[in-house]
Length: 67
Image (cartoon, rainbow, N blue to C red; front, top):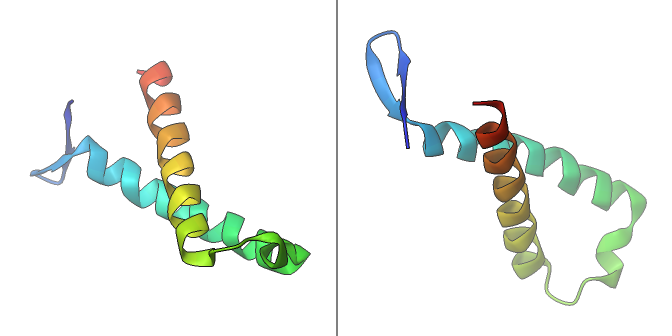
């Protein structure tokens, strides 16, 4: 994996992707909560973790296609 240069500080690309996935995950969780879909989920914390991993996988996949 490549490193990203932020004003002279090299940051692992995975860290940048993880932050982007976290922001995306916040929006998706807010949408799921507003629609009331959490009532269908058995274990909310486990669901949120899996949702984050899906978002992270999507961000990494999208980033690898763009580079």
